[in-house]
Image (cartoon, rainbow, N blue to C red; front, side, top):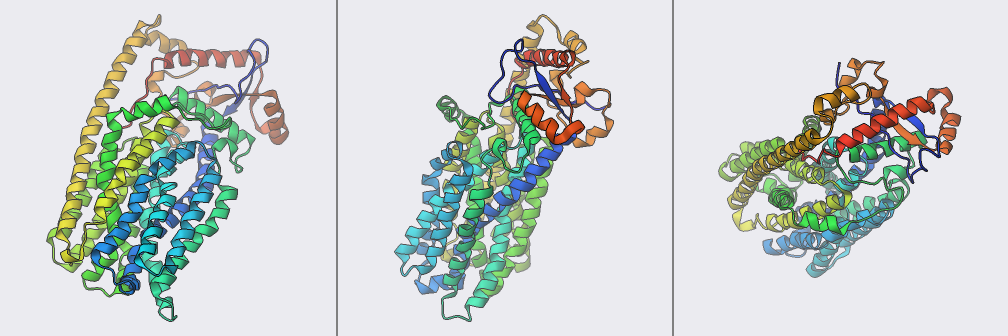
Length: 571
């Protein structure tokens, strides 16, 4: 029989009166119901968030497609001037990373709607410029809009998902980057084909059209993007109570310091300073910096690289799509498996090494087919690494303030990478660009080395924490064996806390072990009354004093033991 689920009993939002004065009422959940809740959040949240990032990445990287659609000739741009157009975006993106703190302060539906309308407006406005300086300024402003959105999304997703669920969702979000780039090439192909039949410059039509969807999506975001799970319109009362239970278990089992947002948003400056003094956040930020050298440069230069391989401009637009489609599938598959294994470093090492090998081939090979094949390894490698590094950073911060600070630091340092990456492919290095390819290869190799070192360091910290836990537990009046014997009839040992619910284990669970396999949440009388009116006998509400007392005592023993359990780093 599989390890039974831990029963968690929590106080309702806002708190209750003393147990002796108010009778406690419990609502019972099954693991199936929690699994259904996560699926419902997935289907209502992830498509919207993913669409927004596709639009953001489309508006960011379409300058590369505009270049080979005639922008370069219209303004007689030199290679250095084009590089500065790319750099302008990342200078503002880097300089305005601090705006990401607003995710914890401003309601998400308002904040994101303003961001996406702003960057869509300025993206389309680029089509009306008449000189290089105007285009440079608009690219700078575009960077401010996107810096406000993309870097904070993984932290936003952590409001909805547990640590073991976050890697795959971050992968779903980040996979929008290769999908957008593939889509950008195909879309640019058809838009420029159409624009060739009009008196308007093809690049102007391209930039104008690709900015419009972002502005339109701002209205959708305002009405449908949830601020927190506790206020999500697509969740009913029972599901919101289960969300409350999930938040409590994140505190009691994972050691996180989170709030459900039902009483506003907060920010703890002490936790901010603690993160700023933590060397681990600078290691992951350095990994992100190195990965971003490749991540930022390839999408905007790939059409030019393909053109230099001998393809015509329009054909190069279409040929840029297949490597990104493969990368899209790879990111989703790898992040899903990474969540299953509850591991990040080993996947980062493998895919960083794969990208490094691809760049080496691009640097030394002169065969067109071999170079094109290497692009598949490169794009799948660095897109996957970026997604996993972001998830790893968020996973290993215990509170929302710490997660926010970690994400801001990750991007503040990491987004310096694109400033380097966008200057790696000058025309003078064409058609093979050996220096740029070599620098990217070295960067990805360093990512793999840093991941190995950080994993080893975190494993040592986890081992040290386990020794301290053992000492604390042995120091208690009950030793480990007697505690197991006294609590196994109600809750599993805290030593099994990491073996959380897995759908595959469900068929092995004993139906009689109700305390093991079901969750409990304290609810108010008003909530109980409303649930009974809605569900009738199809819901299990427990108000029997003896059963409630048994569960509450089990909870008290479990929480007492959990005080010895420390936050563990995900490796």
